[in-house]
Image (spheres, rainbow, N blue to C red):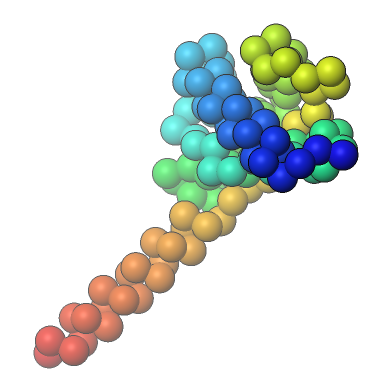
Length: 118
C-alpha cells in the first residue's frame, strides 16, 4: 500500500502531465477547451480516476469522454515514460459537473443580490 502523501504526489503529477499532453500533443478537436479538474489514484495504484470539464458544459461531455477514451492508450504510455512507477495506473475518465454547479450557484446569488437592491 502507498501512503496518502505519495498518492497525492502521484495524482498531482498525473494531472500536470495530462494537462500538458492534451494542450501540446493531442490534436483531436473533441479535446479542445477541456481542463483536468482532478485526479484520484487508488491505493493499489491500479486506477487513476481523471475528472474533466469544459467551458461549454455538459453538452460536449459524451464527445469529450469519447475522445479521451480514444487517446487513453497514448496518454497512459506517454505518462508512464514521464512518471517513474513500477506499474502505471489505468486511466478512467469521468465528467466533473462541479464548475457548472458553481456557475449556477453564482447566478442564483447574483439574482438574489439584484432582488435585494430592488
